[in-house]
Amino acid sequence: MRVPLKEIDALHHSEFEFAVRDLMRRDGFEAERFGGAHDDVCDVRGVDADGRIWVVQCKHKRDGWEGKAIGVEVPQRLNGTAKTVHGARFAVIVTNGGSPCRRWSGARRTAST
Image 1: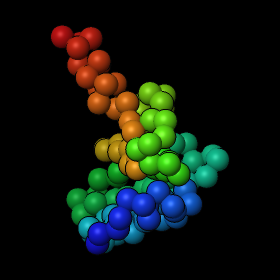
Image 2: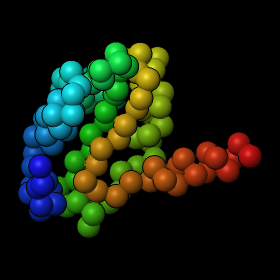
Image 3: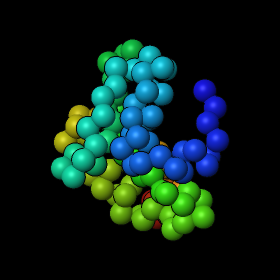
């Protein structure tokens, strides 16, 4: 499935979450959308063929790469809830915009060395 980035940018945030859910289902996951104000940082929850839980936080940006990147608090909050609240083995952030995740994980590695 190929969708131009302009079309992804034009989606409503809930449509973006449903698209992520549908892609997970296409790839063999049992997946449900949970997005909303009180989702505990889980927009889509998937279970893979081995029974492992995946928590996905979707961050849709109407202006895509041109807009402001998601904040570092997003991976921090996801890291704090994925396993403890949702029992997840994997935590994933999906965005059509910029992300500080590389910097955040890189800084974390540097601090631990």
